Image: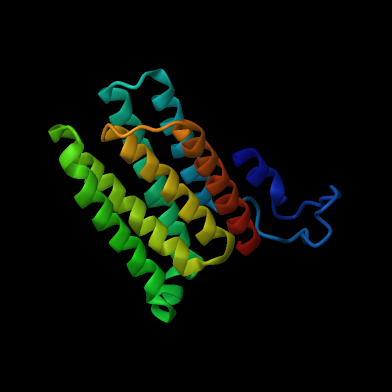
Length: 189
């Protein structure tokens, strides 16, 4: 996705003759939004950390990297008009935060005690990112909902609740969410 984002828009002052770039002017500001690239870089770091093993240190390292994703995305969404969108329609953003509170209330008692605070903090950043994305709307909002659902399934799994197909659902929701966020953001930038 980062490669797609980097190839999507030419640097300022260059001509781009690739198919699909007919509407991109040569004087368009170069490159994709830095917050998007930062978020994708943090996601890559988080994905890599989670590949090493499923023990607590790797889980916490992955969660810390994904915290960087949530902060980067949230900052970028503010630049896309998230606060104006939330002011116009606060319901979806408030609903996102209500789901965060309910999920943490339900899952926290089943998490290992030492994971409760890090999971609550990360998931709050995730919920704020989701609320901001819903303020932007469109593909960005839909992608964030998919990302949130994927992470909720990870939280359910971390709390010891597993079911068949859960891993596939986690990855499908995450990849689809990242795709929608990236393509939606590039369309708006």
